[in-house]
Image (cartoon, rainbow, N blue to C red):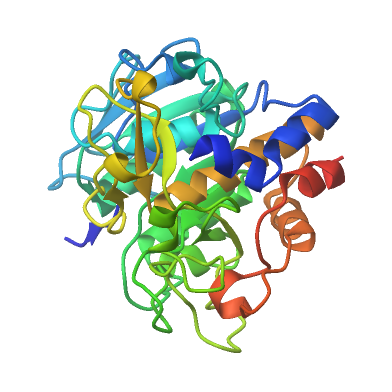
Length: 360
């Protein structure tokens, strides 16, 4: 079985999400945001509290010998343990990701508020290692409960390596989710500056793949992970020059992002999320908030920024945007990143203000 890899106060303004919320009066209200990850600690972490912020929180349990997915609904051999205050029992990765997408910043007096703080989070927890059967069962759950929670976008801060295969079960699943009107967002991967290192799930033409940038107000510690004179994080995976498929869709902040801390206290990668780093000691987290927040870098952190923007867009559009429309708007409104090619950064840095402005 193949294993799959798993500063809001600066990054939210960097993508102009705060301006978008103010100008258009949107917070993601009423929009369901599925977080397919290690789980969400909605018990300890008030920013993503269950059931007020995380309206459904579950663990996926799979019998590997019996599972049959995308032939029957639900996945045969899978069990969904629902209504859990805390589905994050290990690494803290999903809690951190969920805070970026939709945390309300309560425990920091609003300082570390996520992109879409009014959205409805749906935590789909798989534990500290995400395998293909768990992911497929998670997508099946989303399809079964799409209308129950008005799910419009699913965040996937995990991935794998190798070539893109449209017949891969994960790609079949994401295409089916896309066809049902749900936008699928994937991390581009953290395999560095070499060409052709992208997470293959992020390059599907129906998916939004997200590379990682540095925030506009870099600290010295941030610049360690940024190319000199540029804004692209050095770990962010690249595509293939000139290839119409192998490139990120857009880029978002992924260096030293402060977000919700689970009671476990760690933000490690979910198997191969891939290679996210917990660097709380060097990111400038205010000590009075350290009990409830932590800091990490990775395309896993960049991805929920875009997921949150999608929620803002959908609220303004009354939930009527199709995934292809969402993708097109994000590409057309992204800010170009000087000195970088499409295979590195896609259309450029996501611009929430422009994207939400076009979402109607």
